Image (cartoon, rainbow, N blue to C red; front, side, top):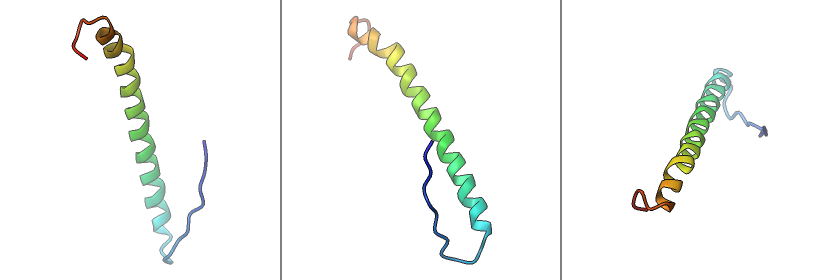
Length: 55
């Protein structure tokens, strides 16, 4: 896992919580998308290669 610096442009420290929540939501969406892509590659591509379904 990598990290990146953050720069606060306002004195509102509640924005840190908002940023962390958004980062967690982004991470969750990325994991979901990678899982879906893996499932697609494991199921649809072999079926297309075998000409069972159209490419």
